[in-house]
Image (cartoon, rainbow, N blue to C red; front, side, top):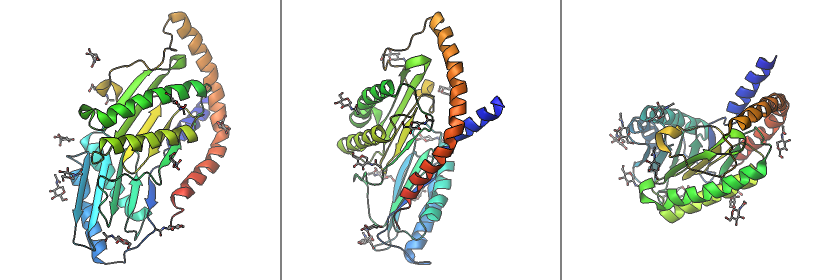
Length: 296
Ligand SMILES: *[C@@H]1O[C@H](CO)[C@@H](O)[C@H](O)[C@H]1NC(C)=O
Ligand SMILES: *[C@@H]1O[C@H](CO)[C@@H](O)[C@H](O)[C@H]1NC(C)=O
Ligand SMILES: *[C@@H]1O[C@H](CO)[C@@H](O)[C@H](O)[C@H]1NC(C)=O
Ligand SMILES: *[C@@H]1O[C@H](CO)[C@@H](O)[C@H](O)[C@H]1NC(C)=O
Ligand SMILES: *[C@@H]1O[C@H](CO)[C@@H](O)[C@H](O)[C@H]1NC(C)=O
Ligand SMILES: *[C@@H]1O[C@H](CO)[C@@H](O)[C@H](O)[C@H]1NC(C)=O
Ligand SMILES: *[C@@H]1O[C@H](CO)[C@@H](O)[C@H](O)[C@H]1NC(C)=O
Ligand SMILES: *[C@@H]1O[C@H](CO)[C@@H](O)[C@H](O)[C@H]1NC(C)=O
Ligand SMILES: *[C@@H]1O[C@H](CO)[C@@H](O)[C@H](O)[C@H]1NC(C)=O
Ligand SMILES: *[C@@H]1O[C@H](CO)[C@@H](O)[C@H](O)[C@H]1NC(C)=O
């Protein structure tokens, strides 16, 4: 019985991401077999091969007014193979989610892809940002808020303004109750340092308004990405140098015993809890989904 609930909880934890998320611009449509559509098809079918060598890529094809501009971005920590596979899926999804649209964005779990009839490189657009929370609540949201605010505000400066960071930064460190806080930010490299900073600043505002009671959250935006969790969603040993976030973690053995006892109790409560708000989530998730497709 417990195992069953645990499986349900695990599925729910994974299900909240629920990609792909699409955003279609409502200003204009192309028609079937138009030159625009041909250019779009050509471009979309070529991108996954580019993704096997580059994590971020822009291109365009055709001549005005049927020219199509496209750009994709994979999260920096994925392998080239994963990036390529992700873009292959995204280039299908974007046409299924936004059929006939001259401008669209799709966000997958590990990559994002956009196209338009006009060039968008180097211009910041934070409209239509999609914040998403981890459905697991946290018992000490105030502690997490502090860490989120403190860690992310440093991290976005690093990503935006440190040339060595190249618009990407991660940080992990101890949180309360033996948990570890993992965070990641990334901008597409065509943004200026200032615009990268602005994009991520808005993303922080979006998570702080949407997701305070959650154990984790992320923001899908056109030119940047932000995420934090209390588990290693990226390979932290590969890229990050354990940095202290806040000083509440206690490593003494007695504490570990106490914490694991409390954690086991909480786990049982959490498992039961997650089962019940599975229902609540369904409603909330649908609400969230609808807002992506508000635009027609
Ligand atoms: C998109 O649709 C919304 C309402 O659905 C409308 O308010 C807005 O003006 C439209 N934008 C464009 C560019 O057509
Ligand atoms: C990337 O895409 C361009 C077309 O935009 C193509 O000419 C080029 O060969 C591609 N590169 C790779 C490595 O696939
Ligand atoms: C993977 O992509 C990187 C650039 O992000 C490139 O330097 C590297 O050669 C690629 N690896 C393979 C196996 O293509
Ligand atoms: C893109 O399409 C919109 C709507 O049809 C149009 O107003 C705009 O001028 C187009 N942009 C370019 C560069 O063709
Ligand atoms: C999680 O937190 C939100 C906001 O405080 C609340 O509405 C929701 O009921 C909580 N869910 C559970 C299972 O505690
Ligand atoms: C984040 O911290 C700054 C000071 O470092 C403070 O001004 C701001 O209000 C905090 N924001 C939130 C959402 O707690
Ligand atoms: C667009 O892609 C080309 C490579 O195809 C690259 O040289 C250029 O820097 C990119 N432009 C921007 C603004 O990212
Ligand atoms: C994200 O934050 C910006 C700035 O506060 C706000 O204008 C925008 O509505 C927010 N978007 C979402 C989806 O919360
Ligand atoms: C994480 O990165 C380290 C160092 O690059 C590597 O040894 C390890 O296999 C990676 N783990 C995963 C799960 O990719
Ligand atoms: C972590 O950073 C410190 C100083 O910034 C450096 O001395 C150390 O070698 C780094 N460790 C790793 C594993 O990168």
